[in-house]
Length: 575
Image 1: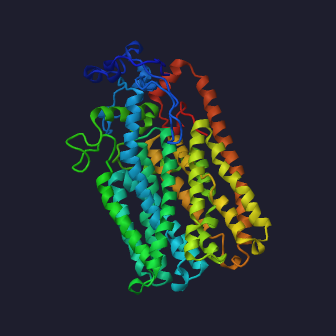
Image 2 (image 1 turned 90 degrees about the vertical axis):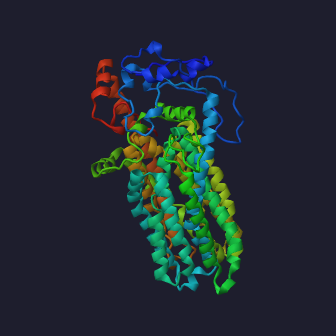
């Protein structure tokens, strides 16, 4: 295994950066451990804006130990020549914490912020149906609750079916080309909802929106993994889904103005809502063609930076590539425009070690989705007017943002993904019990609203589980497919959840549906426990096999094994 060398203070600048001759002459098979420049030690860094900055030596070495520091293992993990970032790979490169932190902030600004803006655009066009409901959307199109359920089911089924094909296309042509194309196409459909005429046109538009938006989320997650280490990605996915919540707040505020356009040119307010928000997404989609680079070393264009450097100079590209690869050598498995064959697809789909995470994706959101999906409609039923109903969605959205970021941070701090994920189910338990035992017909509407707001403020573990899935994939091929399959499971859960509240249960304020939600939530707690048990057992089994091997046998395994990704004996599952 890798020899660990540490140093508290920075070495001279030349040693930190590595000379050109060192980079050119590096040969893992001929380099001795003694000739390897000193390495650094991990430091506990500030992860959120509200935290106090922790003192650290910005000139200390930030390059952490990896398999590339031991000549005997380095050549086994060498990135292939066809990988798009190989020209920046340098196992002897060293950099400081000051350089790394500055670079991460730059990546956040250049890459992460725009990813969040694009996701907000998706959410705006996906969720504005909730605001339209408060403006007599269903009656004016001659539809009822069951038609609305069918529309949600059609949307999610289309979204689900498009996930995997979209991910395969994105891996082939590159997310920097495919994602902007998706956005432009779905924005046209979203705007076209202005001309809805009834049930059929409603269902057709929901189907087209689902097909065109499907795959966007796993595409973005794979794209972000090119730039961030595992723990960094988990935290940033928390912000990514926070952007969705911000979009929900913006949607409610925009609806305040756009729905008041009822009567303009003789059209309903919800028609203007769909048209204007769709055109806004179209603008963002066009900008995405200009603002999404293909990868860390491919940012140069006429719109991004000057000359050959683009957004990042050579030094920054070296740091970006090596810091990510030192943590996870599997990220160099495939070129970012390399297609996945049918054989590789089947190999990834039958990776049973990721099935427990797919099971979580299938069930974890069901207890909360129906309540949120029907919130604006329920608020109208409780006597709130159109504009009150839209504004009353904001408090739970803010609460949801806070709890989601808190649980994402806690998962990394305490390194217990399962325990922090299951808190979502424990959170919802008392509130769903209330909905099942209270006489809702005779309960004050503000009490019902308060309990609903608290329920929907649950600490969503989705960012944790998406990053968890990415970590446990341990190869670009598997990470590409598993991101899509996991999200397909989440969309399937949405289809199930969309059909729990039914028209014939509406008069009782969905008593039957709430009983089903409580039963599913209790089941979910058991599912989380079983997932934990499975991964603990898998790791212990591998520990036993690895410990029984001699050092020579381990090196022979690393050199000659046909095991790939998470099937390798030297890989341990996160849990």
